[in-house]
Image (cartoon, rainbow, N blue to C red; front, side, top):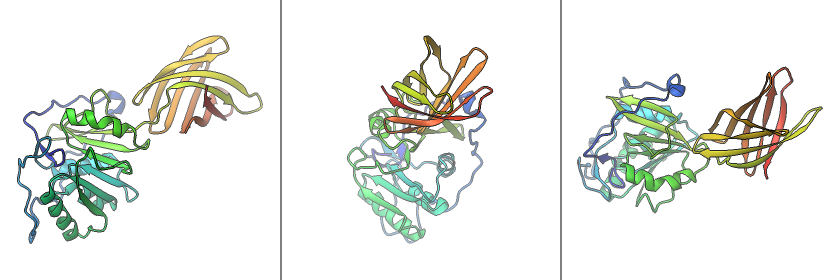
Length: 297
């Protein structure tokens, strides 16, 4: 890791128990075996990284190759992504993202020799045009254009990075090996040798008071108040003079869904964040689906 190289730690966190809601969709990829991720590339002229090389925040050790693939698959990496690795060490994550998924890769690394080594490795692997590396401090280099962010940082560094990460575009996927992001609960987990990799999806901001207008032959106006903690949503819905709780409320990227129950009818709202507006569909028990929109009040 260094604040900028993939990392060595004196302690190892215990493996978290997966959220039952996510257990069914969690990728279990512990048996994956990767090729093409050697620590030393034959014919390399840049000095090979040395385990434990000190950095700004810690020493260097690579993320295990099966976990590299496991986390990138969990994040759904594709050719449309820019995979940014903070503390990219020997360059294995950007290189693998480019070689296996056709993505663009960007490694940010403080150690100049490791940057040179990574550039040579990317060229030797035939992805020098898609995997690039910059020498710099992860707290100073702009990585806001990344669509997938890779981390292997101790908790205090993750905590410092969180404001920048949460300011990234909704839907950005964040993967971290071993260490969590304070009280931001992961959306998914993967395990290798009883150690965890975690996935978060950066959420849009839905908190506030919203005025909802439903379309159709009998349009109606409602008020809903939302509170938010990362991807967790709570609040209440004003249905006439009745203040009703929300059920099954959650956020994924810029997509919001919640349900309310009025008598024997369910109102299922699904919508997308459009700046300071929401747009989506409403399904009411026994009625045709209709559109709805909302603005902050």
